[in-house]
Length: 121
Image (cartoon, rainbow, N blue to C red; front, top):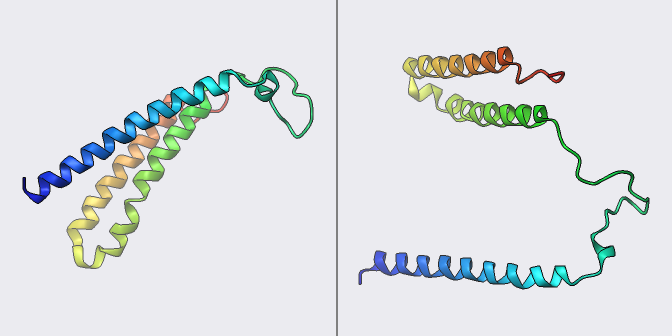
């Protein structure tokens, strides 16, 4: 076997061992947690007795705004390397990035018109 094949085989062996080990550890810990005292599963709020259930439904608007934020934040991260390489890239890079920002803006307008950024929905 050549060196790349040995490295690949070692990588696959480590991944398989890690997967099997994590599943085995989870099954062992599951039995340990199930056998623990019920008081360990109570909600702890700085010594105060909790009011109401711990699991309350969260409005979908929070998830939509978070998703739109992550999407635009990740795409805006592409602007920083572009600015650093702008001098070497030339005028064509300016137009390509203008098109990229225009697509971002259209996505923002679409999310705004659809109502995904409206908290009262």
